[in-house]
Amino acid sequence: MPISFLGIYYKQPSEVVPVGRWGIDFAPDLVANETISKATITVYDSDDKDVTTELVDGAAEIDGAKVSIGFKDGDDGENYKVTIVIETDLGLYEGDFEIYVRER
Image (cartoon, rainbow, N blue to C red):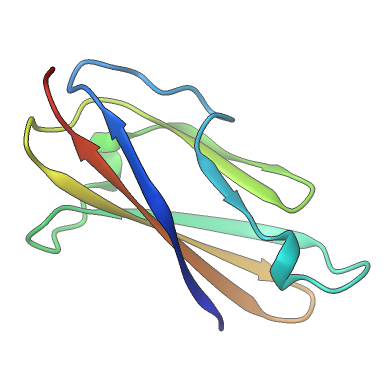
């Protein structure tokens, strides 16, 4: 299962990020005709606590090789790690990015 860290996004505590804006394009990890059948998203705070239900807004969207999710809320000054694991007919792939929540 390849693991890739794909960057950092910033949001304010009250900001709502719609599905489609932030996600991971798994195309570089997939071979021709490999398709995503399932995506699991987990969000962890800096204490490694699962805060998925508090931060995820809506269901994951799979669009070809891209998986995206919406985000809401978050504590000012907190950094969150987002892990997306996809299942395909050939295997599992994982990608990570971080969300820094800062009141500006």
